[in-house]
Image (tube, rainbow, N blue to C red; front, top):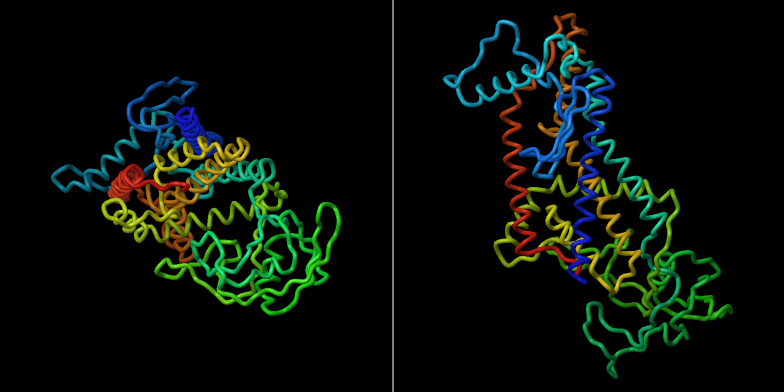
Length: 441
């Protein structure tokens, strides 16, 4: 049964990723056709074609390697400047690659379709076409985050007390019982009991555990009047937090660590009570901030990618542990999805919500990654169009001849370099996810 659930989790992610890629390419396809560009192919995957069918002038199909997709638009690259000479292998490998790219682009332009080419479009139309794919991923992410937050809900700390410590143990202590020298926890002294729901502190209504924690941590040695709901009746208690060394947390609840990865501690008030975690549905207004936070995290990973890849290499080929917040391959994502699906201790609804969250995060990753201004990514084509617009603006400003379209074919060698780098990076992450995977444990 466990194996079956693991397979189900992986299949859900594979289907979710395939649908996301398909919709990404539709984001390119629809505006391209709207603007009159001839689209020869719409393909999901790369490599040998498994299935295809032609509708009108466009061939739609599936390929063997489901790690992306593309649409083939006529005239992606402009021809060489008038008077330019054709390149051959004798002039160098990269020159030949550039010319081959031009020739391949020219071969997509049939007689009578000379005006239906990508490079002839106005700059704003080309930008819309190239941003259509990432925009679709953004829409998918927003919809899925809406389903996750507003439908399934997320696990959060409630204002209900789950447990009360009998004594005060140092931060990070692994002791399972109190000794005679350990001071009694202030929560026990105050009479707080598991199941109590905090209503107010010092006359201020408490609506979240973070709010309660803030009052406790900022009041060492100061008595706090706490009103709790105990089996339907309100009880007033007085508690005095003890000044103690505790772990420091960020505003989002994440544990703070120093540059060496060691948790940071601080001297704060301590009661010795913990919150009951409950699944809580979020308001619609929480969706966009959640998507924005995910975008910021993915962007942060990309900005620090070289450093993170070095850490991944050290982990894969050495003794270091994998960074749970570092880059991960599709294999790793599938493994985590399978682990979530097979965890019997988590309710089915929470497992389904977690899988929805993974697909939402994958779409955020596709969105941010494709906006990197490097060919062959969408951001590279947008950067080329913007550069062309800048050149034409200044030519017009200084009354110079129109410089014409930017010769993006010259960037093909860089494109090949980027493709090779991405291939090596993918292979490294897949290897790391096999030999030293990131797990939920």
